[in-house]
Amino acid sequence: MTSGEKIKASQIVFGLSRELDERSLAAFLRLFAGQRLAAVLIPRMTDEEISQTIEGLSSIMRNHLTEKEYHSLFLGDSGQDS
Picture: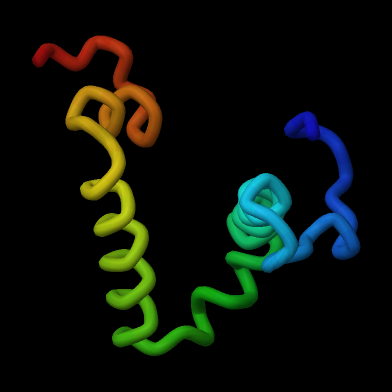
């Protein structure tokens, strides 16, 4: 699935196989991170929900990315010295 391709709800299916779970999670996260949804959802979130979301995502990145990967992939900092 390319970044410009429209994601259909039927493409998001969990629990059938690891491969489908991975593809579905990628599609889900792209939809979740969309500007239109964020503009509506974020102002409605409580402070606790915002903190929980940030902590959960940060924890996953800490568990699975090196510092160099974090700077390169998440922050887009290709000049990170390690």
